[in-house]
Image (cartoon, rainbow, N blue to C red):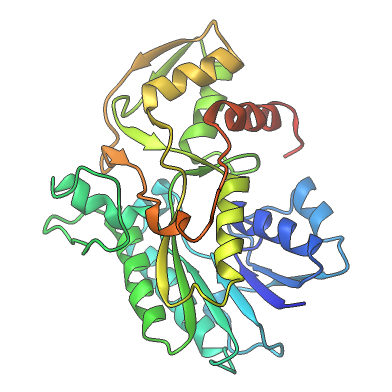
Length: 315
């Protein structure tokens, strides 16, 4: 079985990747500094597995690993619009230095596969500049706008890291996740934010109501990631991760959640969030041509599972 490192292992995607990998008997090392990830009930249950080892470290201070890994899933980064806007230069520093430090620890470049998690935000300037109205494709040349905002530091740090990984000499895969959702994803994402507000308020303001998204349930995202990562055919390339099938406007999404959570809540359209892309939908042709007969979780089923967790689970 493989020896695997997951940075940001206590986070949403890292936790769910580990949950699948331990059942396959891989030796999984979870690295996290817990600046954002939580030692909650679900995570404490996960790390009881004998083939999981928790490493409480900060990548900024990382110098070496005793172990040599077959696969590194690098998810650790500064995320969340509020965190990024609060200190954009810190976002650059942490995201870039963390990746550079991690790459320096790789002892055998021929053996290790490096999986870097970028972001769908790299496509946002194309959409904002009206250069692209169709779904986002990996082959698109990307754009940096002349106007600069604090939020830009996130996608620019991820885009820079993509190039660093590409030049590293390692076998790599770059994933660009699009709107992944599900249980235990925190509260700073649109779906849990809507669940929280609709559950507790009589009147709920819906920001960016006409902006559209295509959401992907966490189990579907993990299945895509693992099938590509464990194949010897798919590396040194970029893949979108997501679900292009059920594009929905944010206001319509709020109505779906309202019907599940609290039908008495009055939802009202409000202003657009600065920097929010008008549309975020992945082109999944490249990913799905390598994953034959892939079945997606429909949005209604995924929302029901997510809402149930947020209303009943310990967190």
